[in-house]
Image 1 (tube, rainbow over the protein chains, first blue to last red):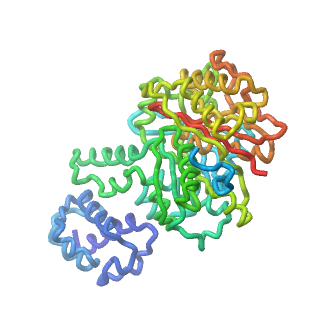
Image 2: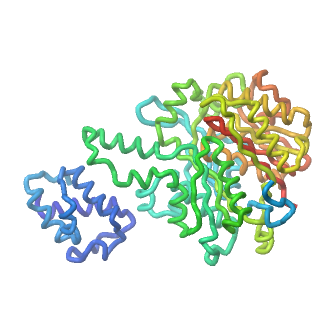
Image 3: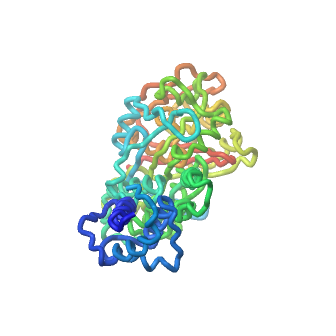
Length: 87
Length: 416
C-alpha cells in the first residue's frame, strides 16, 4: 500500500468509529484527539480494525506512534508495504 | 410495614412517561393503537434459525443520542436512554436545575449481555475463533448495569443507577425499587421501569422454540393469543417503559401532571420450578399487594394480566386470577401482549402504562385474538377483542411474572 492508500484506510476507520465527526479538514500533523472526540476505547478500535482488515499487530508500546495522521502513516508504511489495499 | 402510609411523603406518584413499544413510541400512540386493535408483531430474521415473529420498535433513538453513542452502547441502553429522556421531558420538571445526584435510575431487565456475546462470537468465528479479535467493548456493553449506566452517561445523572434482574417481572420490579428508594429518602426522583433488547439475541427465540413455547402463525398480528384455545406460545418483543416517580408533595409543589399513585405492590417467589409457574404463589402475591394497599378485590377496575400465551402459564394465571378476583363483578381483565408480544424486561412496565389513560377515558383496552376462550382459563371478565367502556376507573392492578418463579404485582390508583 502507498502512504496515500494507508491514509484512506485510516480515514475510513475513523469515519466508522466517530460517525458524527466531519473529517474533511483533518490536519495530518495535529493529534487526532485534539481535532475530534476520541477516547482510549475509540483508539483501541483503530488498532482492532487494522488487525481485522490487514492482520497488523500493533504492540502496546507502539501506540504512541498513532497520535497524528502523519505519524500513523509513517509507522504503518513499512508494515503494510507488501499488503494490497482493500480500499 | 416499615413506612407510614398516611404520611404524604410516602405517597409516590407517576409524573412522566417515556416508552417505546412495537406499536407506538409515545403513550398517546401506544394507547391509540391498543384501543384500535393495532398489532406490532411482524416477521423477523434472526441468526442461525428460520424466520420468526417479533415485536420490533422503531423509535427515533437519534433524538437523544449521537451515532457514536449507538456504536459504543447497546440496544437496551439506547432504548433506556430514549425512554428516560422522554419521561423527563413529559414530566415537565426543571431538569436543567434539578440536582442530578438526587436522581435514581432503576431499570428492570429480563436478561442482558446475550446480544453482545452472540455478536462477538459471530465476529471471532470470521477469524477462526482467535480471541485477539474479541472486542474491548464487550465488557462495558455486557455488565448487568449497562442500560442504567448508559442513562446516567447520557443525562449526567450522578445518583444511584441499577438494573434489576427479575426475568419477565422486571418492569414491575423497576417501579417497586423506585418507590422504595423514594420512601427511604435515598433519592428525590426515580426514573424507573424496564427495557428489553431481547429480539436481538437468537438464543431467546431458539430456547423458546426448543421448549415448545415459541408462537407461530401465518398472520403475525394473530400470533400472540393469550387465553385462546389456539394459542401456541410467546412472541418475543423489544421495548421500554420508564416513568418519573416523585413524592406526592414534591409533585404537587411544582404543579406536575399526576398519572397515578402507586398504592400497593408485592414480589414473591414460587420456589418450585425453573419455568413452570405456580398459581398458589401468584395468588399470594396478588393478595399481598391488595393487603398492602388496604384494598379488597372488588375495588379493582382493571387487571392487566401477564399471560404470555403459553399452554400452562395462562392456565396458572387464570386460576390465580379466578381465586382472587372471581367474586368481583367490577373487575375486568385485559392483556397487552396480544398486541405487541412479550416485551420481556419492558413487559410489566408497558402493560401498566398502556392502561393508565383509563383513569381519564374510563376505557379498558382489549385482549385481542381471543376467538375461543380455553375453558381451562376460567375467567368470566376478560375484555375480549374490543375495548370496553367502564363506568369509572379508580384502580389498575398489574401482574408480571417470570422464570425461576418470580411473581410481582403493582397497584395504581387514580389521583384526584
